[in-house]
Image (cartoon, rainbow, N blue to C red):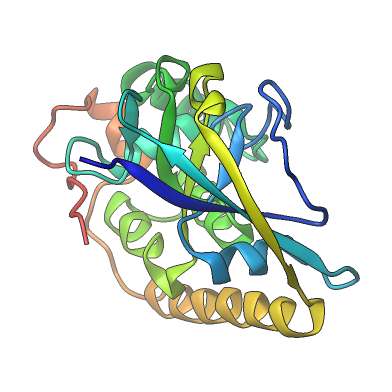
Amino acid sequence: MDKRIIIYHGSEKVVKHPVFGGGKKNNDFGPGFYCTANEELAKEWAVSSLRDGFSNKYTLDTEYLNILNLNSSDYTILNWIAVLVEHRLFAIKTPVARRAKRYLIDHFGVNVNAFDLITGYRADDSYFDYAESFLNNGISIEQLARAMRLGKLGEQIVVKSKFAFSNLKYEGSEAAEKDQYHVLRKNRDNEANRLYLEMFEEESDDLYIQDLMRGGIKNDDPRIPRNIPE
């Protein structure tokens, strides 16, 4: 059975030879090659308000790869955010947030370096704001889980290991024009924020991060909603 997949990397330049060990260490899941299965989304990620970009296309043979899907029912939204707070730089505004970061890593963290390939939400500007609100006790777990689906901001596929990099094959690139794709990206982000503000006004009796810490709640607690694959 053919287990090759097509993935796209949005960038300001053509990337024919992705380099293992490159990239920023403070990306969502640490160093890696960040891609998506959606070519249009890659084009949105490729552009800024000032520059055009490229959607770089690759085939990836996944047959022998150890794959982590943080959006599967094996994990919860807290596993994703624990990975995120371990690698990204957050604004720690309160003592609660400082304790929360450590609690999430200790009780919900996942060793992403044990995997060749990772699938999970991408912490775009909006997603990052939602995660930060949760860390600062501003929204509940249920609200966070709902927020991550707002505006369909996208799922990313991250090539992590040297072995996975060796299975990548460059297939070509397509230009992404800023005048088209930056507008699409901004509209997607604005729609997510609009829906989020509507949700934020709702009353919530669900668990907040402070409830998790006070109750010593861990990953196997049935009160934590499991991911529901789409």
